[in-house]
Structure formats: C-alpha cells, structure tokens
Image (cartoon, rainbow over all chains, first blue to last red; front, side):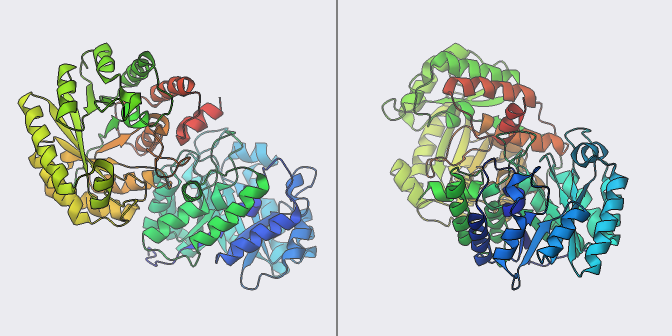
Length: 301
Length: 301
C-alpha cells in the first residue's frame, strides 16, 4: 500500500555527514551551537557525530564531548555513526541511544571503503547490531551506492534489496538508501522505492539523495510518489562529494523543505530557522555552502 | 491527450539569456564560436542574441554581426529576441528567420520590466507578430513570471492561460512559460502543464525553468508527466537570477540532458559536446558557471 500521508520526516545529517570532510577542525562549542539551532528549527532526528578513529577522521575526534555537551535529546533523536564494535563501545560510554551502522550495495565500493566484501560487512553489522540491541540502542542502517558506484559503475537493484533485508533482520528501525555519488535519476529511484515500500513497508525506507547533478529533488518527487516519507538532508547542502571536489554533494535541507512545503507536505520544521542555523555554520567555516535556497535567501538580503 | 513520446526538444538559451547579464562584454567571435560548438552538440534551436537598445544591453550590441557571422542555420533555428517594432526591423535587416517576443503573466512585473500593463504588452505583441508573420518569420512567445513574481508574489494560473491564448492567436508556434525567479514547485508545474497541454496541445508548450531553489529538474519531471516535451535550458546554467545576485538562475542544459537521457528520453543532443561548449565559454568569462553536471564533470577531471 502506498503511503498517502502528507507528513514527511526529515533526518538532518549536516553535523556529521556534512562536516566530516571539512579540512579545518571545528571547535566543539560551535558544533553544539549548530546542532542546538537545528533542534530549534523543529528537526526531530539529527545525525550529530561519529565514533570513528580520531587519526582517520580528526574532525570527529570530539564525538564524546559533543554528545556529553548536548545532553539528553528530550524528544530529538541524536544519531551517531558507529563503524564497528570499538565505536559502539565508545558510543555506549558516551550515553548514546541512537546509532547508525553502514554498509554498501556495491562490492567494489565496500572493498575500497571499508576493506570488506558486502557479506563480511553484513556479518560485522549483525554483531554490532546485536550488542547495540542488547543495550537498548536503536539502530539506523545506511546503504551506500544504491544507484551507482564510482568504481564499478552499475549497481544491481537486487543487491540493494538483499542488503536491506539483512539490515532490517538485524534490527534496524529504518534503512537509509544513499545515492553516494549523486548519479540517480528519477526512474531508478521510483523503481527501487516501489520494491522497498512493497517489500518492507514505507516506514522502513529513508532516501539519502545527493544533488551532485541537480537531480536530488526530482528523485525526491518520485520517491514521494511511491510512498517514501523519510528523507536525509544536510543544512545548506554541507558535505561535498569526495569523488568530485568542488561539486555539490548532499541534498540541502532548505531545498528539501522548500519543495515539500510548497507541495503541501508537512514536516514540522521551520525553513527560516534552518537557514539561520546554516548561516551560523557558514560563518564558522568562513565559506558559503552550496544549498540553493540558502544562497537565494542570503543573496537577496 | 497526453504526449507519450520519448523525444524531447531542448531549446538552448545560453548565448542570449545566459550571457545578457555578463558584466564584461564578450567579443563577437567568442559568442559565435560558443554557438557553433552548441550546434555541434546536436542542438536544433538556439537563442543566439537580441535586437535590443545597445545603450540598455551593451552585451547584445553586436546582434547583427553575430547573425551575419553565423550565416544560415542549415537546419538549426537561430532564435533572436525582439522587444518591439524597432527590434524587429533590425532583425529583419540582419536576415533573421526566427524571433522570440515576450510578455509576462504578472501585472506588476510587466509594469516594472517593460512599463506596460499586460494588455498593453499584448497589443504591442500583436502588432510586432503581425508584421513578422508577413515577412515569413516564425515567432516564439515568452511569458515571464508564470509561477510567481518578485513584486506581487502570487500569479494566477488563469492569467497565464489567458496570455497564452493571445500569444497563440497572434501566431506563435510555441509559447515558453518562464519561472523567472525560480520559485515554482512540482504541483504548480503539473497543474499549469495539464491545462496548457489540454487547452492548446503539447506541441505548443515549452517550459523555461530556473534552478534558483534546486527545483528545476523536479519541475521538469512533473511537466514530462503531463506531456510537455520542450524545455529551455542554458549551457552550464549561464545566466544568474538578477533578483538574487550570486544565486543560480537558468536550468543548466547539461543537468537537463543528464536527467532526460537517464530516464530514457531522446534529445539528439550529445551531453559531452555541450560540456565542451560550456568549458570554452567558461574560459572566455574566466569563471565557473553554476551548472551541476558541468561542475561535477570538470571537477573530476
């Protein structure tokens, strides 16, 4: 059954996915202020940080401090990315209640990115998920490269569906399907969305679309047509595509909200307040992020 | 009847609409080279220049020379913008066979932009069109601000339809409906497209969408759903939005082609060759235009 609700849930990924590739390390207090401003906009799910190796991702070295400073979510899910058992251990010590675990739908991407086959990655996923469930932590799944891969090109829809099934069996409350390099076109997104909504229910499906080729909102429209009601987005489009420096990456939260509200969907999020959060962060990083609504609104002022 | 053809016609507006707001005047030979490269890509309709007052738009002062240097189209329609009888006279002297005439669907925009009411503008349209028809010149109509206006905000769909009817009666072979400030959302575009296709036939409808808020391709998808098969676009997204400096304006031809080809539509245009034309022009203007596919493709090289 296709969901016909006008309620859409937006998962903000700016503080983690957006900032992780910033070359200058941002001070913890600025990250917390950014997150608190996003909370003020009405967002109820925010990816805040990741418990990864500080030598690999220095930008996220303050993960525990970010979470400690934020305190309890009070109705907002603070989601932290966790790559493995070690990361989970650190997240649990920091009192984290919501984690995101990731794998991919491209064999070559998974090998190059995390040095595992998809199946090895799924086994690790199961182990981390089991432990997290035992601790009462909720788990979001991420699948990278659902629509194309920088190494192998084509990605089979069947592989995405098979991976999704495993992640849901491992206890994920929802799975986020990433167009990691921003190559998806609406026909692809419609086809995959239909299979996922029919197979697993709309409530389990989140689309994580990139705007590298300007197609993100066109893809959102087709996902909406198929009943998808959860979308990831990053404030002002923070987070470039590492495979094409200078190009755009994440769909901007403001662009998504502009589209959704204009089409009559309700999100509970105030666009103006997200712009204010982005404006703050833009000053912190000393650069204008690529989000189009953000640029249009700030340019005209 | 909704058109279900997979053939889509792309009208390239970069050389005129894209370049007219460039502050530095581009030399005629570079404009001609840019246009010839666009022709090489397979584009069959290109807006090349405009016969406007040189003191108002110095960038287009070489209109006659551009047309003379280009020579006959040999199967490509070179469309030139003509604001009034004087412009038509100059265009006819330069041997122009295809002109574009414009008006708007917003009373306040038309007053501020061309100092006329919509009705006055339509009367002028009729006079210029009659003379052009008499000379065997084909006429394309442009309607500005079909989805929103920087001055009056809301624009009535009924006004757009009424203006369209007049332009078609005046002899336009097609009318291009502009989202001049890039505010349209897919529900609006679907609604207007349906009325226009049902009322006047898909062959008369062209959508001229802006990507100021990232919605252009989402709007294209909904227009396609309703049978629209002609879209205006500008190489690499040339042509900013004068109402929001620094923001994006025209939908980029490359982004449109990427979407259309990925969805299985045929355009007869080679994306790679349009990128080459944009790359040339980018060097001429010494700046990276905003088109997303253009940036992704050039950044990764």
